[in-house]
Length: 495
Image (tube, one colour):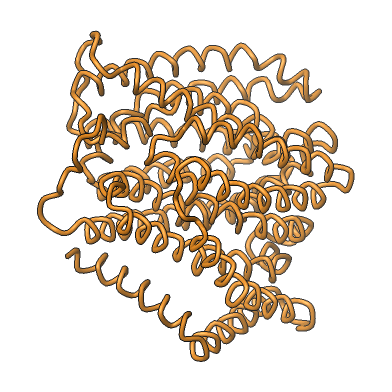
């Protein structure tokens, strides 16, 4: 919606039902994808050394900046528009493709300096094999946007599940042959290639030749501002791996990175698909402030009751959970995982503020927030480096808590939106549900001397028992559960 145009009224099922159906499809997709990735991690962790995982993580932590530059915020610029023309979309395709090609070449050339930075010569071929990924992803970006704008979430599901499955199969085949590092690199490369090969035909769209078109400056300007925010956020998310790699070496990076991947898995499972659905849907109702706020609060209920509670319970049984999933060789990653999971709680609920900035085209304010808040997180992470990977995780957790509170204050200042309900809801749910559930799981982990799998099972049961008790005694929790149940019912029925 741009230039004061009225919201586009969707045809067929109600907007809320379409949002629920879209959420259902994407959540199921992300669940399936996460299970594939988790299963792959569990399998490969028993076949590949932590140091090999660390080498790949050290490369991706630095070269991944190219992924943000490759997109340049243009996918989000397109997603929030209800009036995108064929020529605009085509121009965006050519821009993404050109940037991806240039970045692939740059990353390839940086393979030697990057290896020198870490002091590890083996990184040179790793970087060179990963470099083409950015070109393949650049080609796929606007094809994927075309599918998303048409709300064809089932097609996105095919891509998001099939690509990692094929890539994992190739990685396992190589790992069985003793090529652990090659397996991890091929897994990354194959995911991008297969996704591209599937995305193009499923989009049922083809770009026109590039031409001048009205509105491009606004699209590129939005994308550039959003990319600036992403770059700051990316630096914040990856400074930990870079610092640990420089100070402690690939094994500690491998332990930290796998703990990190598991700690953010609920965010990937729930928050990422919710963002795909929430942004285009909220953009259609932003002029109706009551419906707009109701949609934001409903979305936050999912982040608080589901994502945050899962993370806090997982933190409580961190070490037995890691040992059960990855094996005894990874037990040292358990405490790191527990602290990272707590930090992910704040990352989860902070995402709602990002939706508001994107939907209301407040990317300038979003960028200013990042310029103020992200350095705070980085400073705390680097301070924690003194105490090793666990200290780094603790610094990041504290930083994300501060950034969440700062984000809400910034939203109110920039948009005038009453954010108090969002703040109160989040604190109430975490204090009444998430923290006690996590504490119950922790007590089991501390005092039950059983095998890791049974500690995890009993910890989850203890957490579930608390959730049942608080639901029975709290009328407000029961009301929230009814809201979530209605949302699920809409997702199933689609009307």
